[in-house]
Amino acid sequence: MTENSFETKGVERTPAFREISARHADGDLIVVRMTSTEEVELLHQMTVSEIGPSVASLAAMLKVHKHNPECLWSIFRCPLSGGPERLAGYFGFLHLNTAGVAALNDRTLCGRDPDLALVARAGERPAALYVWAAIARKMRMISEMLVAQALGADRYGGLPVYATAGTLGGLKWLNHLGEADRGPQETALGNVFRV
Image 1: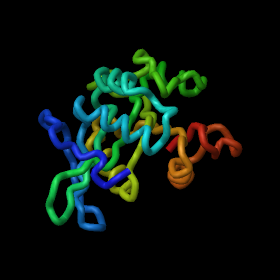
Image 2: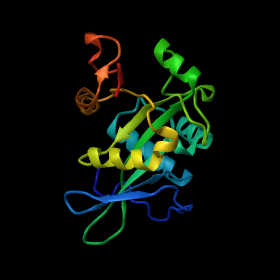
Image 3: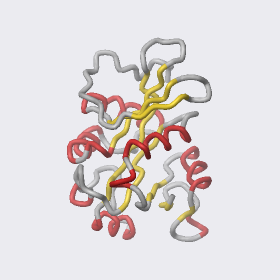
């Protein structure tokens, strides 16, 4: 992937919802904001490129985004030297309702094509957050902080957060942050962690 693979030239922006930014240690400005509909295809391309082809389809991502736009948060890098902002990553969540948490516990939650009956609508307080995908190379810590601020403590504070490691990088991140929910054999790819 080249440095400019995911530039957002020509993508129209709707007014930002809870845009949060902070300086990265390298000087770039990291900006997190709710993903626009026009950006979802870029996020899907990034997911396939970074995680692999066995991920949710573009249609599934668009379906979840339409149901609850707060599920996708784009991460942009704005160079210290100026120049265009560059889409550098994102966090995708499934905002699980009570039935969604039960499906996660029963191992029937399908991340590749989520059942919207298991996902809270925008404006509703979910029962838990499931990290659907996370791409934030060399900026994960600052991006996590910014996404948490953008989501807001009023609706999302205190919620349990779950994730499944889909890559070795993701597994390393989850082993650092949380513990596997199901016992010592669970600290491996494909297993559910409570963060």
